[in-house]
Image 1 (tube, rainbow, N blue to C red):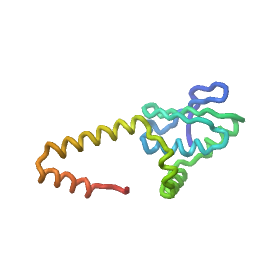
Image 2: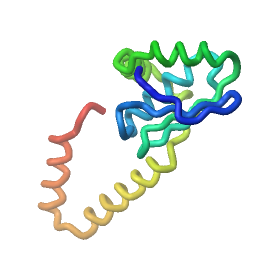
Image 3: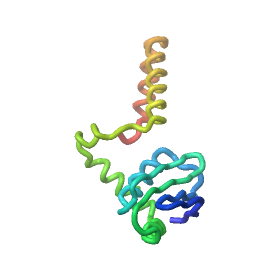
Length: 137
């Protein structure tokens, strides 16, 4: 993976990826991948800048070598496979990102208002459209 170290203190570094902005899905994959690196204790992802802050214990050179060897495509494939095998107990322990919670609240609010205000034929058409464009759930 190509990155540049922007800032570094004792056992913390902030890196910038050369991919630009980071989407929500990329954030989840990157967070999953970096948290699995031995000695990494905390991962913070900044969407707008494409920066990632890593807190770690241990040797800096080992962390850097693991970051350089990181292959985003392989981690994406692994994350998708692991997500399918997650049990209910694990899902109950997970917490949603506050930004994602806001998006979900707004989506639910819009859906509720649309169901109350729109006449029944438009509601059915809207929900049929949603079913047709539904991606992998």
